[in-house]
Length: 79
Length: 142
Image (cartoon, rainbow over all chains, first blue to last red; front, side, top):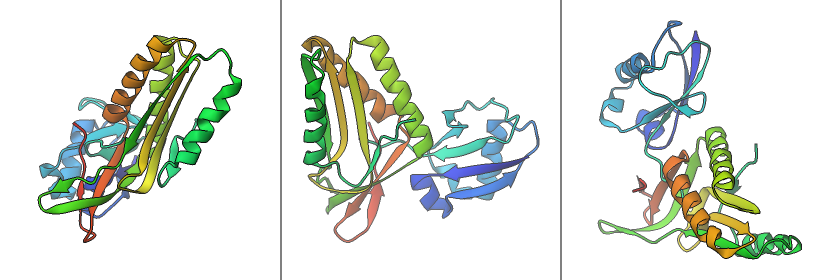
């Protein structure tokens, strides 16, 4: 399945990309996606971030079943 | 879904108009307002001149909706409004405007704190502190 990945703030700046489409297996977990993303963008290993799946914060064991939207979110600093 | 984001600073005219709009709602006996203002922080030997905000807007708007709904359940409120800047906001300008109204005063103090703390912690908004020389650092909420 092809998944749209969005990067924000410090993370987008560090990897010089704010959006990309990647193809994953149908039963990929958030944890596996993290590994794939770190392999592609090594700098992610040093950064602090959370992952949102379909606009909700996701845990490592969440499995992506449909074509979800994934967002990589650095620490929040609103207000 | 209501869009809470406003391009650039939130002006005192906008805040004044919001207050004015509530004067027709005569069951209200108490308002409370929180205004977040951009501070001229000194970081190492450089001074912040502005914060440039970006956000995961769809998720943030959903989160703001969820936070407001939770506040209505928790407190006896008549109204609650949240506005947050997107883009550049200079030092001394307003970047967050939270406005609650209720029949009586006690709940508005608790409600405003509840809303502001949840916004700071849970809204996917990212502030870049820009210095005079155009370099920047990314801000992190405590």
